[in-house]
Image 1 (cartoon, rainbow, N blue to C red):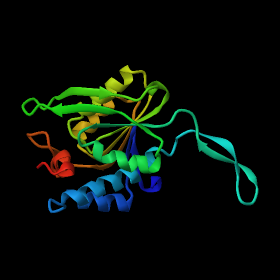
Image 2 (image 1 turned 135 degrees about the horizontal axis):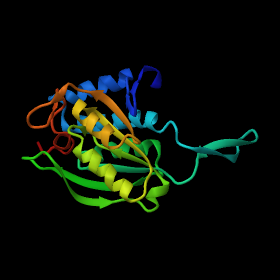
Image 3 (image 1 turned 90 degrees about the horizontal axis):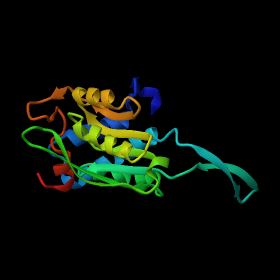
Length: 216
């Protein structure tokens, strides 16, 4: 996947053909709830494969049917996946398919419909968060406000090794996030044109939460 990626500062825009294909299917307003959920999970798995390529490993002794050997496993504290509620929940299963032992936290944010500013209403993180690799997930990075605030909360709990995954991002959100958190690696499936007056990404895919949960 990395061979086709475009990397700029701490932003990695993933360029795998399968990822592009699945994002196109997400955009289609005719894609139903069940298929939309499945696509979100598949895309999260493809993105997670790349985002987790630098997980630390250590060698352990394993007995194969042929002989005993030393072979690598993930080292240290396990991964923590933290979705931004509610749309981020759709990406969790894709990451857990790669790392079933990962712990899962939750951060609740909603966007004020008038100011477009994020409002926090819930935060519950796994124990030992400061010693874990933390992957924050949200399908859309629009203004960047929710993403910035979520990472602020996680840093306040002592975490230092943080990654962020968004399927679609607006240039405005990328700038806001990288300005606020230049130390956090950001993985994006696609960078779209801009935000409209209602702070929705264009061309985007609409409200990801509504499409995941069938509440549109």
